[in-house]
Image (cartoon, rainbow over all chains, first blue to last red; front, side, top):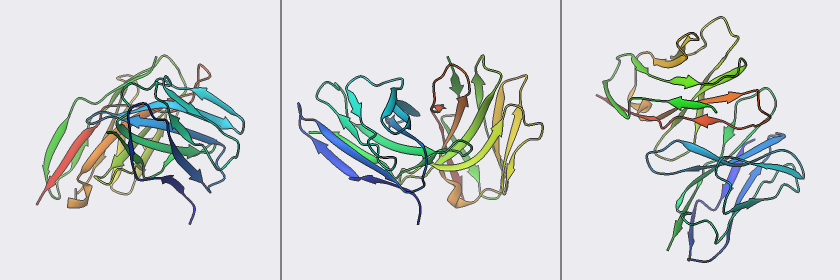
Length: 111
Length: 116
């Protein structure tokens, strides 16, 4: 079945560590996105990529990094510079004339 | 800058009743799209319905319809004959064509609880 796979579902990070969240899609979508959701809040855009080897900052990119080496993959690294990384992270993809399709999300907790 | 406002943090509705979830938006772009997503407790975002700024008819998808009032900048979601499975968070979102930026701007959501 076509879709977006995020892994892991739950992730625990120690203070000062970098962690990488995986996002893979087999929908042949050109554009991919990362959003952050805090409790009781809507989603906020971290980074997006419209084509391979190119990506743009969203509204809250500080403390995060991404890469887009393959069309199918858009991993997000939460660096130690992100002061408050505990949140729910959602990856999405779309093609030109479709709505955004979302993955199941990764819940990151700092311990 | 774009902004989405959802003024109802939570709603309780009796099963089988119709529900209206409010959404107002702000943008200076003439071309934009409005979306509604459902987020169950499991966390995934499920697309419900889309309305383009130039669409003359209100969008409908099964039990979902979008009451689009362009002059008032509102895009309310109407769920007819609510069901227990409709209990979830509902988010209104917008995408604009201008400024070179991509991605959706979301409201803070409405927590809908359907009571038997």
